[in-house]
Image 1 (cartoon, one colour):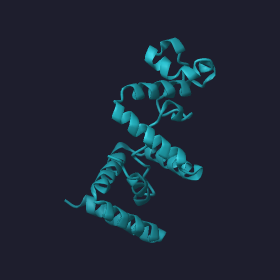
Image 2 (cartoon, helix red, strand yellow):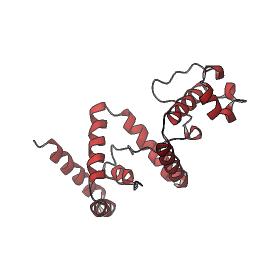
Image 3 (cartoon, one colour):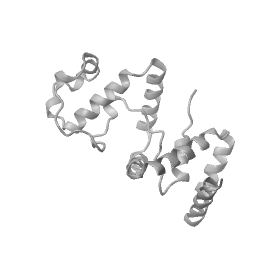
Length: 173
């Protein structure tokens, strides 16, 4: 099943808080240079990688020791995720990565900033955003499109009112 870019609308609907939760699955080359919180800063030895990871990352073998430790860990982690995927998941990851690459750099930067803001939220706020995204994704395509158009046409004040109404509905028993 091909997914529409529903995460884009979710990002728009929760603009002050939301980062696209449906982050594009990453190939080993797509792993960001910046370390995620808690990522070890000690270098990772090439020979500590599994043979399957080494095969997947072989183009980095000659310069592995010159890569920043965070990048080494990110590449190793990405390779581990890739190796844990089945054929269908890998195809979906490739599609998502190609979609990511086709986005203009300004759009990718916006998404990165939103992701960083999302990562800084407390777990309850992150879960609320995930719930809102899942609810949005369950809507029929015509309803999602209608919400997109309303959001894009709204002024900042109207968007804030929309967000407030959404929060109020969530808080009602």
